[in-house]
Image 1 (cartoon, rainbow, N blue to C red):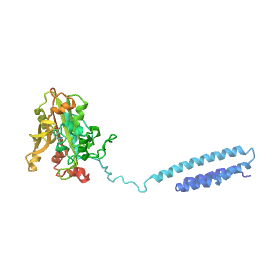
Image 2 (tube, protein in one colour):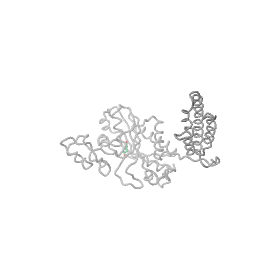
Image 3 (cartoon, helix red, strand yellow):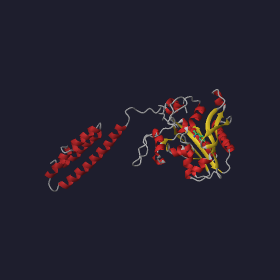
Image 4 (cartoon, rainbow, N blue to C red):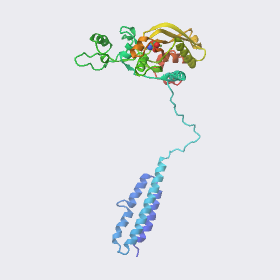
Amino acid sequence: MATILDDIEPLKQNALGELKNAPDLAALEQTKGAWVGPNGKFTALMKQLGALSKEERPAAGKLINAAKTELETALTARREELEMKAALPKEPADFTLPGRRRALGKLHPLTQVTDDIVRAFRKIGFAVADGPEIEDEYHCFDALNTPADHPARDTQDTFYLAAPPPAPAGKPEPAAKQDVDRAEKLNLTPAEKPLLLRTHTSSVQIRVMEKQPPPVRIIVPGRVYRRDNADATHNPTFHQIEGLYVDKNVTVGDLKGTVEFVFKELMGEDVKIRFRPHYFSYTEPSYEIDFSNSLVKKMGKHWLEIAGCGMVHPQVFETVGYDPEIWTGWAFGFGIERIAMLRYGINDIRLFYENDLRFLRQF
Ligand code: DAH
């Protein structure tokens, strides 16, 4: 008499055949349900186990379990196969196509020029220092010996921050530059005065000298802000490099030699430098540095004004606690955009700030 034992093998073969031939993942899941789901044909067979005699049951159970394992293995194998097939591109790959070029970023031209200037100064032992762009009047002006009525402090030039430090109870709140004058009259302490965006990197000279004893040999590349309307040669924000050298017996000759060395490193051997007497409150004597080379001549000029400099004013040393009888020093500051414009032949400073890729890709 035929028993369910005889049904197991052919049923299993059928199931295996269907699983292996399932054309896609959805069909595979359907096939799985049809065989081993709650109403599946194999499940039905297992339910019949109960009808067997005690003697037949163990052998039948064993057979059915083995068949089930085999089906599960086949199911997993086919599922992996189909999943891999689904992940493959529909079109065959064409290995002769040219590769896809990756867009490489570049350093902004101002960063490139700054890096070159820093490299030149590093060669002669200068370290890079920095300081905050949001400054107080003390570091930006007072400590640099710039009197309160100096035009550099005028509202025309300086961005004062609208949110000053909170006024102490009982004193009125200073709001902006118009309040600076009021602050003067109100006798506010420096901490109560409004903050500003630094108009030059010279403020960092003070911050460095406050922190460390002499000697000092630093440069400070950084962003500065002025209330200028943007045109071809002005922008409300630009960059400077400040230099400060303090030691014993420092001379104007050292200053001139250093400036000349750095500009030759940057622009080549045909560079000429000229010092013209000038006024800065934090240096005495003070000079403006004029620069000349073939590029300047090509612009139809003889000299281009490129930096301010001078011997550090004794009053500045007094302010930071350096003894002016012992220490001498020089300082300079120049605009990075000026140098970049000259170097690359750029005639509008605003180009540096527009982030137009057609411009930036050229460097
Ligand atoms: N701070 C000046 C400016 O922004 C530049 C300058 C002049 C810096 C003379 C100096 C200096 O350190 O000694 O125009």
